Image 1 (tube, chains in turn orange, blue):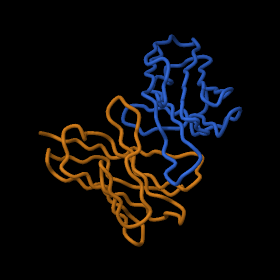
Image 2 (cartoon, rainbow over the protein chains, first blue to last red):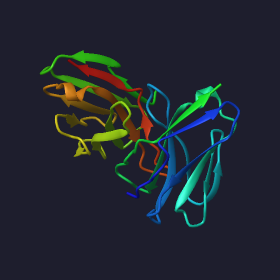
Image 3 (spheres, rainbow over the protein chains, first blue to last red):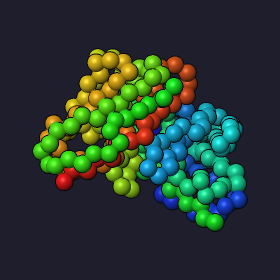
Image 4 (cartoon, rainbow over the protein chains, first blue to last red):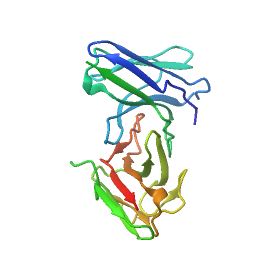
Amino acid sequence: LAKTTQPISMDSYEGQEVNITCSHNNIATNDYITWYQQFPSQGPRFIIQGYKTKVTNEVASLFIPADRKSSTLSLPRVSLSDTAVYYCLAVPSGYSTLTFGKGTMLLVSP
Amino acid sequence: NAGVTQTPKFRVLKTGQSMTLLCAQDMNHEYMYWYRQDPGMGLRLIHYSVGEGTTAKGEVPDGYNVSRLKKQNFLLGLESAAPSQTSVYFCASRGGTGTAYEQYFGPGTRLTVT
């Protein structure tokens, strides 16, 4: 599995846009960039996945440049409830197991 | 559709006691997983199953056993609990089709071993 690197923590204020960058220099051709979100005392939940360019859903946007060596998760106008740990993974299609790193702890303050 | 459920939600054990954690999913998923999460750490895979009747070791399998007798259930057993097994345990499942292959997680079981 391709290794991903992301910041350990980030701070933001309510209403701001937050961009979390993930580095994945050795990503494989069949890997999809996938982000999970974990609120305190809950299990992680899938929020977005992409292969190239831009993907947007009701939670976030994911930007992946053409070389696919990095990606950016964008959370528009965060609120206190966006305080969570965000995990970036390079997921091969048809995988058996995943390795979750420590993720990025996002703290949103009033 | 309850998704992934875990039983119990909380448990306190004394060193040497045994217990079984139950994970159930109602999505007809082939794959099921058991993870543990310690404070400030990411998730670590204990055991997993790629289908009914199959199990495989993950990253940290020592001290745990698992069984997948029915497709919808995945049991995690601790034969002789140790304080080092104090953790939050998450079960997850995923289907076998589509590109997302997203894992669906249960709410977790908080286990304390004294």
